Image (cartoon, rainbow, N blue to C red; front, top):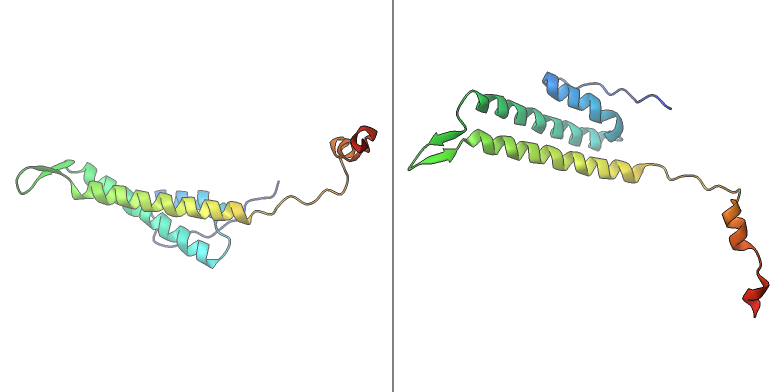
Length: 124
C-alpha cells in the first residue's frame, strides 16, 4: 500500500479546519484548481464552526420586529455547512472519475475460455 501524500496545511485555518484539511487533502487534491476548491470548502467549514460557537453563547431564538425568529447565525452555519458539503462531494466525484482504470488482463480466466469454446450445437 502506498503512503498517502502529505499536503501542506494552508495558513489561517483553525485546528478543526486543519484536521479536516489533513483528512481530505491527500485524496481530493490532484491539481491547483482542486486545491483552491478544497481550501474554499474548508474555509466554509471553519466559518460554519465559528458561527456555531458564537451561536452557542447566545440564544437560538431572537425577538425582533413582531416576534421570535431564528438567530441569523443559525442560517449562516447551515449555509456554510451546505456549501462545504457540496464542494467536497463534487471533488470526491471528480477524484473518483480520475482514478486509473484497472489494466487489461491478457490472460483469460476459465470463464473466458468456456465462453469462447466452440459448441457444435450452436451451428445447427
